[in-house]
Image (cartoon, rainbow, N blue to C red; front, side, top):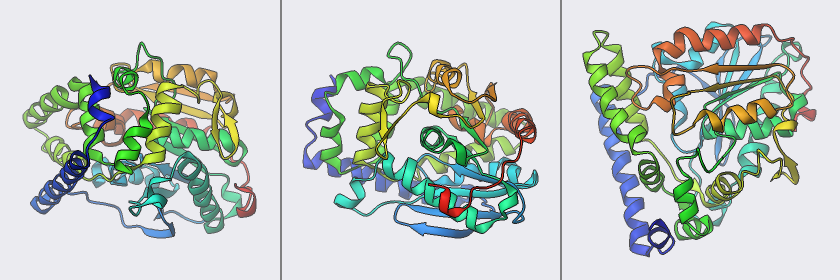
Length: 376
C-alpha cells in the first residue's frame, strides 16, 4: 500500500508536501508570537560552516566540556526550551563548559542533498571537537558527547569512530538496533522498495513527509498520547506543565528538510540493514559497530516506548565495547507533548534522570585532552 504511494511521487505531490512544511513553519511562528516560543540561554557561535553552527553557552576554560548533539530534523532549542526545562542549563549549573551542534538548513540542489553520515557523524562533529579543544584548557580533559534520538545515532557513530577522543558517550532514547519484530517503522520500510526513490523525488525530504510517516507508523505516540498529555497538563495545577506543552508544540512546527543521502542511509543502512549493530556501517571509509564504542557509555531508554523500544537500545548498549556502562530507564512526564522528548524537557527527567547521569560522570576519570590536531 505504501510502496505505490510514496515511490511514484509526482512533481505536484512533492511541491504540496514542501508547501505543507512552509505552512507548518508559519503556524509555529504564530505560536511564538503568542508567547509560546523558547526562552533560550545566551550563547555565541564558536564555529560555523554549511550545515552547522557550534554554539558555546559558557563555562570556564578549565571546566570539563560537553558536546550536545540534536537530531538534524527540527531545531536544536529543544535542549534549551526554557530555564526550568533546559538541559543546557543543567550542565552549566553542574560546572560544565557547554557546546551544542546546531544543525542548520542546507541549500537546495546537489550539495544540500548529498550530506550523509560522513558529514554529520564524522566531519562536522570532528570540527566541533577541534573547536572545543582550541577553546578550552588542555587539562579540562576530553569532551563528553551526548545525543538524543537521531542525534544519538550520530553521537554513537562518532564515538565508535573516535573512542579515544571522548571522555564518555551519553545516548538518550537513540535507536541503534532495528529488529523487525519490535520496530514500529518496519512495515513502512518493508513496503518501500528503496528509499532512494523518495530521496530522488524530494532532493531534501521535507519534515511534513517525515511527520506523516511517523504518524502512520505509530499513531498512538504521535496522536492520541499527545492529546491525552494536553488534557493532563491542563489539569495540572502547576501552569508550567501546559507552558512546556505549548513550547514543545511550537518546536514540532520548527523543522527543516533531511538531506536525501542521510534519509536514504537511515532507512537502508539502519532500519533495513541494521548495519551499525552488525558492525557493517561504513562511515569515513571505515566499518563501525558497537564493539568500537569503547568510551564509557550511558544509555537512557523508555520501556513504555513503541517509537524507540527498549529492544532498539539495550542490545547495542550491552554489545558496546565500553568497560564502564550505565543503563537508565525513563518513565515519562506530564506536559511534555511528545514523550520521546520528555528526557529533555520533563520534570521527572530533570529531578531524577539527569542527576543520575551527572553522578555517574563525576565518577569517571578526567583524561587529558588530545589537542586540536589529533581529534579527527
